Image 1 (cartoon, rainbow, N blue to C red):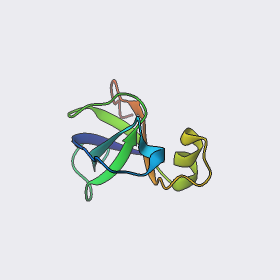
Image 2 (cartoon, rainbow, N blue to C red):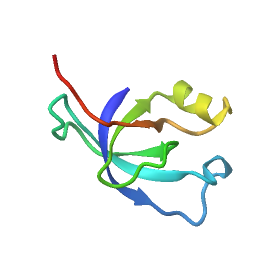
Image 3 (cartoon, rainbow, N blue to C red):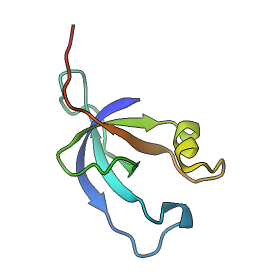
Image 4 (cartoon, one colour):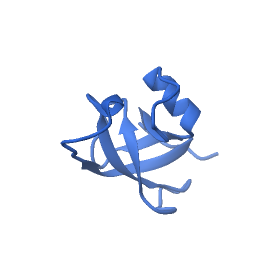
Length: 89
């Protein structure tokens, strides 16, 4: 899992059937100080996130496919949670 910030969304008229009914968001990975850390990538939203939200992203195909309940879903990354706060110990 990674922390990321939602920086935009993707709209597609034609897409794979498994994506119907789900938003595809552009996310920016973050480090532990919530600073950008790496290149942006696309992630399927399962929690109604929006631009500006800090989110928890699963970046692993099998975990992503489990949310779709489809072992053949062409998915690599899903947004699994919206972060309320970050505390470092």
